[in-house]
Image (cartoon, rainbow, N blue to C red; front, top):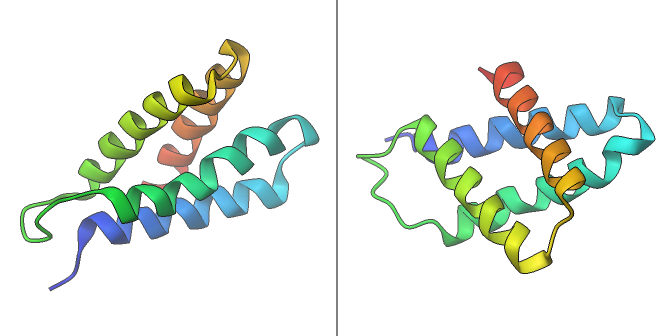
Length: 94
């Protein structure tokens, strides 16, 4: 049975990697921050693959980012740019 959570994670990661290859220098930090978080979310998330949806990955990843922002004392400008790039990645992946 396919795992929609992991499939979505892989799809988003591919999108972020593509965005990184096209990105202007000022977006490289944000994308470089976001990409490795995908694998961390995949490793740490606890769920039943038969009951999860692709959208659950998006919500889990977003919550994960919020907690890492706090831990890393992320600047508000960086947080805002990451949020903008995240929204772009979602729309580009959907």
